[in-house]
Image (cartoon, rainbow, N blue to C red; front, side):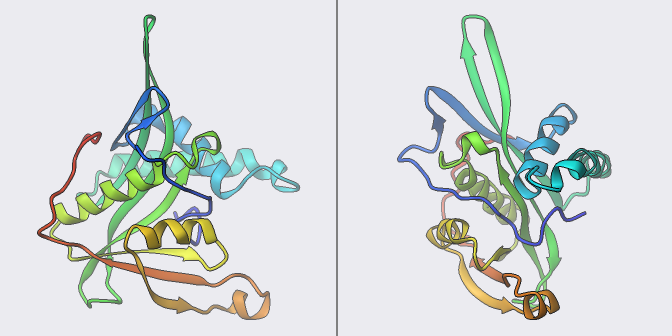
Length: 213
């Protein structure tokens, strides 16, 4: 199930040190069963905010996303990963983990190189944690995974009117490969999708700080 038609629908920017949110630590790891409820809320609120008539359908949308995440977690495909960004809050009372973002990466038939390429989708960050480097860290981990899979290319989609997300992707080295037209963009004047592409530097040093497999 694709929750959206673009890889991101929310604004991002990055601070000088994306490793921490305030005095707390940020890590990226593979999603676990205990994350699914919070993850479904994050995805649903990002791609289907409960505004207007959507307020009535929001619980059903969230439940559908929840069930889909559960199903895919059970499948354990070797070339499909759902990642979660976790804010770790430490205090004298103990340690608390909070889901603040998510992204997926998998292999798709390549329209760029002709073979299989890594593809990023469903990038979402919770509203209160945006513009804190979460999305950039998720993207970096996706590129590390693609490198581990032996991929030379990585791609994603973004809507042409999502200026904040485009700014993030371009700053991370993604380039426009294709402007896609559809019936809805032509008849309903809906924003078109942009296919962005990045070549993975096989020789670059992979920074794994703050990540877990």
